[in-house]
Length: 396
Figure (spheres, rainbow, N blue to C red):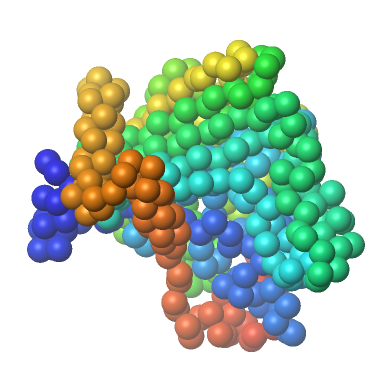
């Protein structure tokens, strides 16, 4: 089937090819979407330091994020190079007071290819092998004036000697509810390097806000499959290739860390950070159930070498597993090339630029929750604007 045929099916309403897509925000922290501060200071109310530990209300974020059209079930990539102080689950940036030219993301990532029905998507994230310079970026940009150039990630020297990973993430749909995921990790350095790869599947938190919504569940089915059950979305299965460790926690606020209140569950949103970086074995659920999951791969990649991790998210448990994976992925790549060849008659270099520009536009589609009455009155019914919903619900 060509991409043109999928567009015809989608526009006629026959097939919901856009049920899944790149709708996950690049950044949910520090936005007005999550702001309940009395003075409207979104940056201070929900800073980057809170993001790993604090449940969002109105959306989610992640690297190379992918989710359903209602943003119930989300998929994205988490990384650790063995040196960073925190698990890399989302993009880092500066707030309006830190950046010498205002708020600004301080990462290197590129949207490379995309089709209108999201049948094929590809992006690149560049991850340093040295410790990510969170503090240096904040301090130096805060020091500089408006007439000075911005201090960018590449200026820190963290990519010197090509000591970084190129991480390519591709999505290819075998059907409207059957998504193939390939993660290719290339070591651009001159020495072997270790990277921890944690593809994550989780539910947006819709159950902690006092409106009686049922809590969905993630649980292990066998040694390599995670089952996801949601009252509105239905059931899905994430099948992993190889032998990763399957980890589970809850997409719920670590109130003890942020607000010095006891947690209702020991398995909080930052459970994978705690488990991997702080070596806290009690931070993940040994029963392998929760609302946030990860498949932990530890890869040792030689100099100039590449390793591939493959996963499959589908409504059914497919007996074929990964048997048709390469065939489907190759077909979607060719179909993406074909639709741009029809649209843009240019020399190959200019055509690649055009594809990247369109991919960037498609890749930046995000879902914005628009329940205005609840948003204005607070996350919990009866909670007035300016009162923290996180603090309000801590005793529950």
